[in-house]
Every structure is written in C-alpha cells, then in structure tokens.
Image (cartoon, rainbow, N blue to C red; front, side):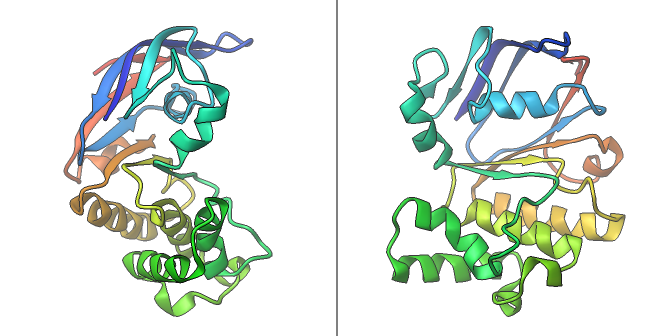
Length: 216
C-alpha cells in the first residue's frame, strides 16, 4: 500500500530526513515515534506528496513520487485521510458541515454526503453534536471531528500527525480508542507521535526515528 525507499528530504536549515525505508501494509497500524524535530512530519508530507524526495521514492497505491504529475496529487490525497495536531476545523462551519466539506470538494451528491457524514460522526461518537460549532466543543471533541472528516471519504490510509499532542492523558486515550476501532475495520493507519510510552500500550508496529533517520 505505502512504501518509502531510501527517501531523503532536505531543508535550507539542514534538517530533514535521510535514508528512510519502510512500508505500511493494508490494514496495518503503525506508530512513527520520535522526539520533536526528528522528521516525523516530513515523513508524512512525503506520503501525501507535499514534499518531494531529493533521493529515493515513495509509492502510495498506484502513485509513485518519481512519476506523479502535479495535477495528480489532489487525486492521491482523496485516497488518504489526514489528521493534524491542531484540528484545522473551519470556525464558521458546524460539525456536520466541517465533515461534509471533504465530500463537497469531490462533488458527492447531497444524499450520499448526509449518509457518510452521519456514519463518520457515529464512528467517533459525536452524532449528537452535528450542529454544534467548533468553539462549543472540547479539544478532544474537536479532534474527533477532525478524525471524522478524515475518514468520511473511506480512505485506504489514515495519516495522523501527533493527534493526541494537545490533549490530556484521558482524552488522548479516547482518541486512541477511536483510531484503533477505525483500524479494526480495515483502514491502515500511520500515526506520528513523540509519546513512546503511550503507544507501547497499544497493538501495532512501532518505528523509531531520530535526527531524520530510522533507529529501530
């Protein structure tokens, strides 16, 4: 499903990643663990092709970073769900419309949008807050909305970049339960986190990264 082969990405300040090689199989749960600045977000950016490798290549389904055209990147991203640490919800849209946005962009029919949004909100336990505004929700609830938006298009792979980073331990555990439930239904998940102690408590493969290189 996803393969990174000897990937190197450099930035002007000298940071980046180097010789990153690993894969994510269909239905797999993988934790990418390392301290802040280790290169975890850069790895994810190469997968949704926001960053192009200076060396090596990334394969996501039928797309290869060596050959993908810029016009094809949006179609690649439609096969992915992406969750960020800072939620990135639209402040002027309620919960339902935040989740619906992903489907509106691809021109889904209104009947299909309603069906999928309600199902995604049920998956994250927020059906009862469909018409609440983001500022009426707790941090954990906002992250659940972000997850619902990421899965509403039934992606093959969910990328989660520090999804529990701004949350207290109890709320973080609830988010982890949501992600594991989604994974159980067959969605592959690659989660980047600095919290090694937390992920050790959950099933899944752990990949450690530090200073831009895989260390374990």
